[in-house]
Length: 309
Image 1 (cartoon, rainbow, N blue to C red):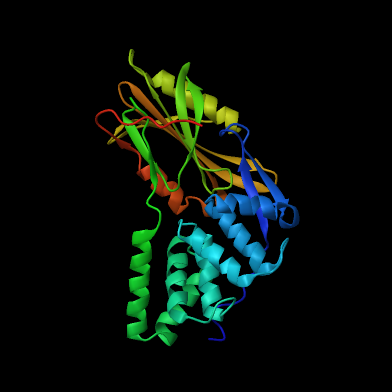
Image 2 (image 1 turned 90 degrees about the vertical axis):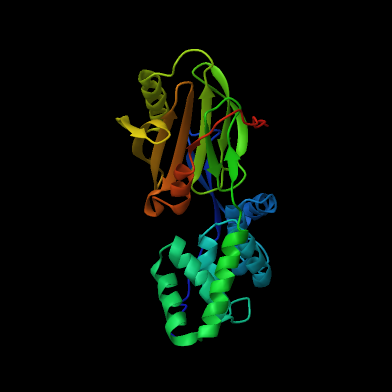
C-alpha cells in the first residue's frame, strides 16, 4: 500500500462565479480565514461546492478550528450531490485512514467514482491497485454494491419547464429562479447557484403569436455572446431531433482563469430555449455540462410554471 494513496495537496478557499446572470460573470476568490463562515452558510443551505470547501477548510484547519471528522461529514454531503471533486478526497481519506479508519472497500468505491467522473491519474491508480492487490472478490462485490447503491440515491435533478414552453431541461441541483426579459417578453430564468461548477443557465420564451425566425435566434445568440465577452462569435445552425439548433462556442478569460462558454438555442414554431454553460477549460466538457445539454427535450401539453423569487 506504500505507493497507493499519495498525499493530495489541497488549499482551502472559496471561489465564486458571480453575476446576476451570464452577463459580466467573473471569478471572485476569498481566503478561507475571512470566508469560512460565508462558505459554511452556503453549505448549510445545500450548496455542494460550498460543502466541499468547508470540508477542506475543516480538514486542514484553514480559517477555522481543525476538525477532520467533521470535514469528512461535509465531504459526504457534497459527494451525494454529485460534486465529483469530493470523490477524490474520500478515495484518499479511506485509503490512508485520514480522519476516518482505513476502509479499503469504501476507498475503492470513491476511487472508482472519482476515476469515472474526474478521470484523474491518482484515482485510476488507486482504484486499479486496490482491485488487483488488496481487495478479495467478496470485497469487490461489496464495493460494487455500494457503488450501485450510491448511484441510485444521489440527487436526480430538477426540471425547468415554464408554462407555455415547448421544451424542458434538467438541472443537477435545485436552480435559482429569477425574472428576466427576452425579446421584450417576461421570462423566468433558471441558473445554478453562484458557487456551483459548471455555471448552468436556462431561459425559455414562448410566443403565442408569430413565429420565431432564424434571424431572431441569431440576434439573440450574438447579443448574449458579446455580453459575456466572446470575441467574434459565430452562430452555427444545425437540425436536431427536438427542433432547429443554433449554438456559439467561445472562451473567456477572467483574471488567471480560463473558461469555455457554450450557448445553445433550440427553436420550435412558438418557443425558444436558450441554454448557457460556463465550464473551466481544464474540465471541459465536464460530465455535468454534457448531462445538462443532453437533458434538453421537447414536451407536450402545458407544464407548471416555476415561480421566481
